[in-house]
Image (cartoon, rainbow, N blue to C red):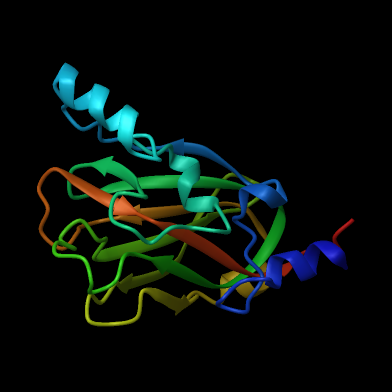
Length: 188
């Protein structure tokens, strides 16, 4: 039960089965955007900044996420994907996507049109939900599963597809992605 309590220790108040600390891992993803820095810019960045200038895809699985500009995983272009291999099969019920708030001068890199898929034990993809991340909404936006197959089929792999962002032509930033539901078997 301690693991389930850790999963719920989150501002959304729902278990997050995508947490890296709970054993989930990024199994596949689209290319990571790398900022083009001159030698001197890269030197100054490393000298004065407390973050790498490119975050790894596992950034979206951290429980304590900084919602400061740049503390995200940037994928190349206006679309992309990330596939998460969960620690155990989960009956998914909803998903939460985080992006920085309105205090940022430019949020055009926020995902806009998003689809989520679950991969069953036989390797078949199931479309679970489609939604639009609203820039005028909350920083953390949760969306329910719309495909009832998810209520009776546990998924060990979940794929987030970003079909578009809010206008940035170079990259799309994901700050955090959460998978909510209930385990198909009790946690050890």
